[in-house]
Length: 514
Image (cartoon, rainbow, N blue to C red):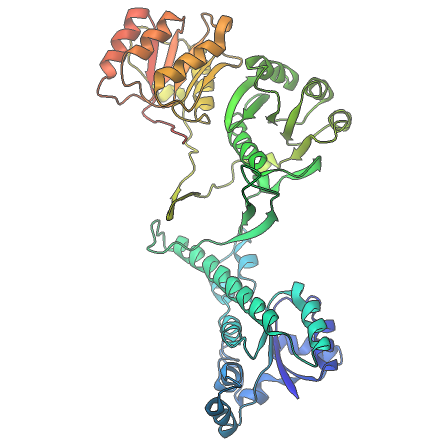
């Protein structure tokens, strides 16, 4: 008779699976709460103490860590010495293991979890059995995922009581992914508990959310993985109400759009994102007015763009958005009539994001490089324009400072070298991603065009290395500039600003976005 050991925390779908094993001629060894569930279901089981000849001790911390268990799992059936050792010590081989682990992730997800509770939910015996069975997959079937129950039972039925070697190898690989992910969560949690910001080993774990149709280009394969401890304010947690699945590029643009719109909380704001850069940001007394201004900022580039709104979409705004082709609209909600208008277009993606969690703690960003990865804190620095330092003879007005703050938030989400020209209502021109700063400035000023007036201000994500940028800005009517400062040639910039009567403030912080 074949033997299975069954010990699970999540007992969903367990009874039908074990009944199938019994019908296939397996005797069942079980532990604690699992045994009780099976006994109550009328399934005959053998208690783990009958196998180990030793009681569970230390509040269940030790129950399966025993040679009668691990010898039965690790013995190679094709090795005569191994089998002779089992016989000598009266150890019965174990042919199948069904184990899932203590709910560590669920425990630490609780808002007020105590360290002691987290520690008690670190499974020791379960991973040990899983790893032992997976190591010996030549002879042992190991099941840790309920999604595999039916396949395993079907193979056992079709193959006279066992699974195929290919299936056992596949299940073994899954086990090591599962235990690695489990250990990664534990290591992350404990590392955070002791305040270690730069551990010598970085263990991360993600769950497959979707296999994408393709990546940035159709010839590239792509996969979407989600943080094992997902954030609520995330494009991956958005509720898709309408439209096709998001593509690889859609997800990147949508992610950048909600990062950007998160900056603007005080009044209705609309962000239009295109190829990871804002092509227009507008704010107003109403969402419709904010849309009008975002659209006016760049009515050409907004075509096919990703739109993020920081308020529930109303009918008036929806009717105006409906007039042009948009890839994605993201908002905290939609009025029924607004949704009905937008949903008339088959392919537009309508997403709902929970903005009530926009200020939840951020996690580190991860970027791949050839042969490794970079990780950093997200750029969520909160700034107050009252803390900025004016370095020119001309001082900015309070209204200019508010416009500068608006432009400063926008430039923070524009690819460096980044320049944003704006007024108190909207962006006027965006220059992004150029190899030198003055080219970005020229692009931004060109986009602004005739909209440049005495209310126009400029934000630069990093300092100006020479005075030429301020000269160009002054010649084109810019009245106030915000930049980090810190160049060895800052005085050239200041002198040029004074020549043209431009107010310049230094923030002391740059916002590169590569």
